[in-house]
Image (tube, rainbow, N blue to C red):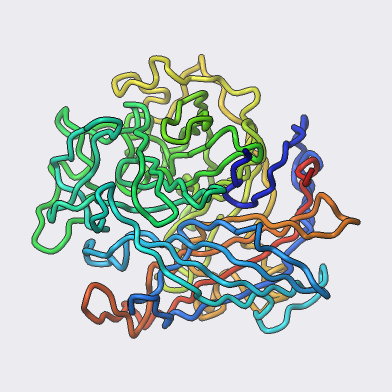
Length: 489
């Protein structure tokens, strides 16, 4: 039985592309046969939207299109997708927000390639349902920052992060939906990979190699230094080794053949240079054998070099990755971005929001080796061990391309208004164009995480108002792309 690709239930095999060529200078980019034909649609869900439980709607930390429901008729498309919010509105610390999954109805009428958009209404998105995610006993989980103590491993379940109220602590980031309705969800805290039932109950959990587990004073400590009301800050503030605070398994995807699950750390571990924004380049991609959904087995592991850029002051910065889409077990699309710029935050102009093609076919496989131990960095102080060959990155889609954005009334940069892209773009998903004349063409949906920024917000029994008057909508950008070999049987 084939499994759903998290972004397109294609049930197909991918013919590996063998050459990566530089992106073209214009808005239509070609990478080893992969083609970006440009932006063809925009849509919004208002910041004021409430979910099924009456709480302010959180948008896209992760997204998966239900391609079984995807249909095409007279130039328009209909279907549904799942949007995964993260741990709730937490500007002043985390709260007891219950993790959940939103189902969104989609009507999509793409603009003609290169044409002007129609008032950002090509994508009409409607909230259809909201489902809570619970622990393995059916009890509520929480977005609260975890304690220094952990829930001990028992049976097949590894040790798990728990909050001050004793609940399983989740900071959800990516989703893979499976044919039976169950799902894999990755999180920041562990950073773990969880499998939930179709009803949202925890079934199993996978802990990453020891090198990624956050350690403080020799013990696992899953805090991200975002304590809830009355809770103490962790000591020390940052882990000694393992994932950096708020830099967990941000991207995750199933390969089209359903055989492998790929998860990528948002940036380098602490011991690999992740203790500094200028040295956190060498992150890791974990490739799991998914033949037994309850017991994922680490099959491969590679170093992925994140993109480097200069900020407005000329300082070297590393763009963390926010999401991936698997093309095969050795290649994937990866969205990387800067931070602190866009609608809802102080800065107005993003310097890097880009989708790359990542090829690990010639990269060193470090799975199960000495670099998986916390005391053996693969990139001490950010300098990659000379014995290791990293993955290859090639630019594919520039989300900040104003020539594309302006066609739909959007922009990157001043004025920092409703039409300036918001800061965090963290979700991607694929759906077929369903055109027999274009069998290799797909719509790549990209969505933001609006951080629940609203002026009439309501969560965990209390109203709130985001700073600076921000009302940040959930937004969808849709690109038409050609992915040779990624075609239905």
